[in-house]
Image (cartoon, rainbow, N blue to C red):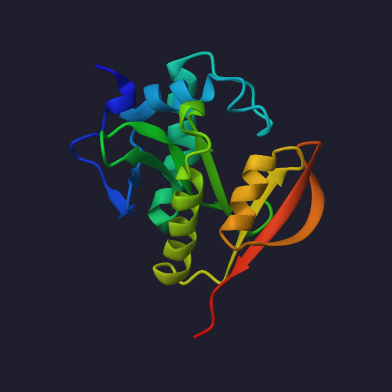
Length: 180
């Protein structure tokens, strides 16, 4: 089986867009996370070394991704509707160390430049504001990651400052709950 085309039969769909399905990860998705995070170009700006085993990917799912789900937050697997291909992840994560909700996304290199991150991030923001009634969502990107910065700007997030995270310079963006 090609792990790039696998969607578990017991998947928990968070939402769908025109082209995408975003769903919760399961421990069985470790090969997908491994495939994504073993590419040095994919993890270049995220201050993480490439993964070297599926076991590492399973630890990430168990210790970082799954604990967010009871709060209806999390990093969600992105699949293309047209062929069920795994494209990466997007979603909202609570960061207790800074008491904020963080929008994040990471795509397989073969899906860069196709508008997938923008589409998934737009709908993740809307989900956070409309379904979870979040007040503010933060997005951060390494100052040299122009593609990621472009996504944050395209989805309407506003630049608020620069900063340092993991000893790397970042740009920080914010979006707030739309007023009715």
